Picture 1 (cartoon, rainbow, N blue to C red):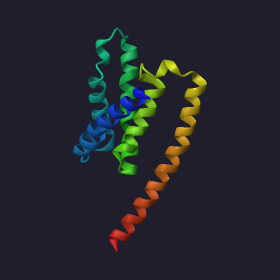
Picture 2 (cartoon, rainbow, N blue to C red):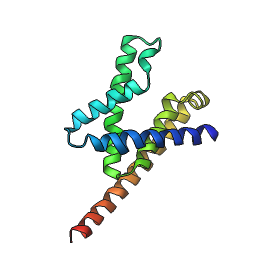
Picture 3 (cartoon, rainbow, N blue to C red):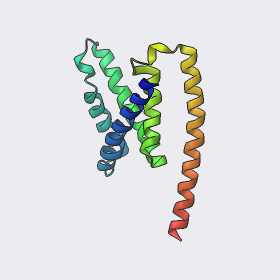
Amino acid sequence: FIAIIGTLAYCIMEEYGWRGYLQEELKTLKPWQKYLIIGFIWYLWHLAFLTEATVGDNLFFLSMMIFGSWGIGQVAESTKSILASACFHLIIQIMMFNALIKNGIDGTEKLIILGVSVVIWIVIIKKWEKENTIANTVYKK
């Protein structure tokens, strides 16, 4: 419980910086430029290059940070919510990176968490998109 709460707080704070600040500051760039920059800075932020990982491992991690920047960035843009981005980030932390959690759950449990999360994300994102469309329509009138 403590690991999840601590990780959620970490994810909220990190997403506030990446999506809440940096993504907004780079909004005038083309999307591929914006996500490439955010992903590269995010890679540097994690200091993965200072580990004993191979060049291939570092290139894979860099590509994951760029892909993650695009994916979580899309969540932030479609929902207009840092909390939604943080929840997406939390699932990635639980599934792959968080040392306090990742070894405590097996592959089947990870797949169940991922499956349930994806269904919930789709429902929430569709609901938020619908509400944003309605709000924008009412606002334009």
